[in-house]
Figure (spheres, rainbow, N blue to C red):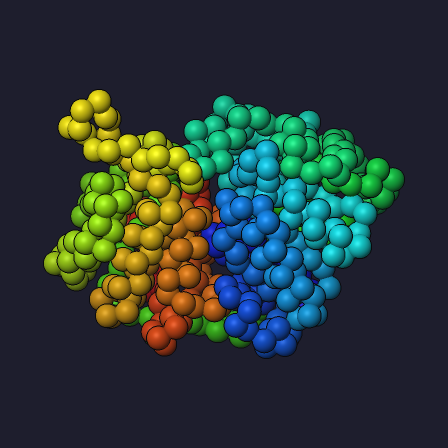
Amino acid sequence: MLIGAVADDFTGATDLASGLRSRGLETVVVVAPAAVDPRSHAGVDAVVVALKTRTAPVDVAVDQSTTALSWLIEAGAERLALKYCSTFDSTDEGNIGPVLDAFRDRLGVDRAIVVPAFPANGRTVRDGRLFVGDDLLEDSPMRHHPLTPMTRSRLRDLLSPQTPTPVTEVPLGRVRAGVDALTAALDAAPAGYLVVDAVDDDDLVTIGRATSHHRLVSGGAGLALGFGTDDAPSPGLPDAFAHVTGRRLVVCGSASAATRGQIAHAAATHPTRKVDLTAATTDPAAEVAALAAWVRGLDADSVPVVYSVGEPSDVVAPGAEPAPADGEPGQGRATAPAAVVESVLSTLVHDLVADGTVGRVVVAGGETSGAVVTALGTTALVIGPPLGPGVCWSAATTSAGRPVALVLKSGNFGATDLFSTAWEALS
């Protein structure tokens, strides 16, 4: 196994895996490593372990991530990677820094690159600062993320509060000097974390080649450009989609501006329904039943869209108190804890797949994607047709043996018409 990666959410895992496959590497996403023999995937080129640790407590994230790392080492991975979001989603407590510290200790390495850049989706790093399109991260919609609000743009300022390890910036000029010069610069840099500038795909290829001798790397899905070759995907990759049938469904738990735009676009031609946040909080089982009945009552050829977030403030961070519904004295619009929203949407998907109503599902939002895959009880995902940078189909089998095709989409990714066009890749 050439590459073994640990991803801090499920959409990030499929995002990286899709990039690795496009580089000619046979790639599998493992969802539940504890239930899978590491030797069962020893013959593939790359394995990405999908975790749901981005917003988990630090100790939980470190424990689960290092367990996954040990699994990959046992599976024979030559190089290891920590994959996190291209917008560096985290708080001052973690979890990127603490997990990286644990990986360095486990592997006995003195340095690791930090490269969240993903130019294909507008994420670039210049002068050590992370940009989303033309905007600094702190000026992008990520500033208002309900779980990980990003109010700074300099990666050193984001990472340093999370770790005692020194953070050094490597400017773009070093990258543009070529592979040999960058290799020398990285090897001569102080031990610790090396934030490397990258503004286009060629920069990522150079970084990948310059770090080919590094046992540990970290970054976003753009890291895939530094692995593998420019060849087409490996011949003989299984076509896991031909037999997947059943109705279509879109569920959205993301608060991102991109997903809200996709919902608005879909509403013009597809039936849409917003989760009743008050009902989801007070009687989640009843709300799931109501949503499921609504889906089952629609035309079988329709593409229903169930979403939970009209505005970012609809979802509140863990530990925060949700607001009651309109109409109660002194109170404003209803909100719901993120965990409640994830539970309602994931249970809805589970129930509709379990009874054979639905077989193809687009899921928007990293936390929601993790909840959906966990609810379905699948242990591995086979990467399938790409739908754009960072977005692809994957195939899975539920714990009950039902096949299901899934798109696990980061809230920030995908074309505006994705909910209407994603299905074309399966025809």
